[in-house]
Length: 78
Image (cartoon, rainbow, N blue to C red; front, top):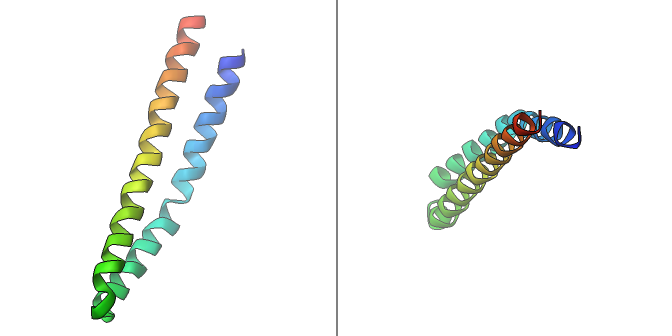
């Protein structure tokens, strides 16, 4: 039962993160716009945008892996 609750929380967390995907994409779009308009600092903005994109992918990947592990645990406990 405990594992089912954990699985539900992870699924909820995944949904919350998916809902935040649009704001993250908007930040990346704004960073791209800054890169194109502010040439002297373009490298900094490009690095920040790349870093944000990679971090976002990592967060999603970790949550998906955790969800799979919890789903397997729930299936095993049944």
